[in-house]
Length: 139
Image 1 (cartoon, rainbow, N blue to C red):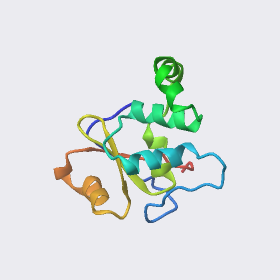
Image 2: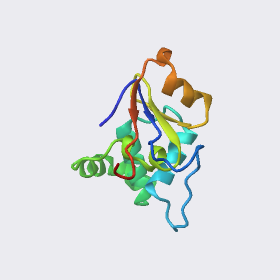
Image 3: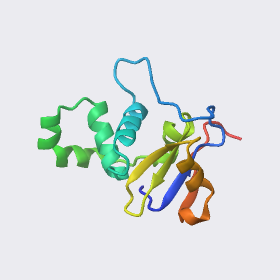
Image 4: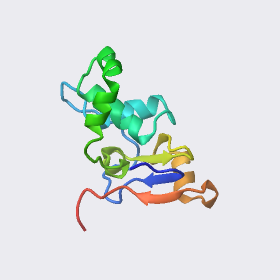
């Protein structure tokens, strides 16, 4: 699922007050670490599908040449099953990052304490649909 002109606020039960860079002690990076790296280094460069594909390729450690050669096959296999939207990502649920989709569906992330987050989350002039990230725990 991809959105346009939408802002996903940090989950109500998010345990942090500021945006935290995700770090795990695992040998291989987690999907949310890869999401963060891609979105932080290139805001508004990826649509939801493009982000899913890049995260998948990097998480599975598919070599770049193989990923280019087999891109249609890898995409078909990846998108043969449904994937959750970024409302379910650990970035807004656990790490304090709001997610903005622009008019073209390109994605950027903003730390909970940033002026950009405040603008998209509270300003009617932003012209975005507001959604909350999914809670980690049931009410």
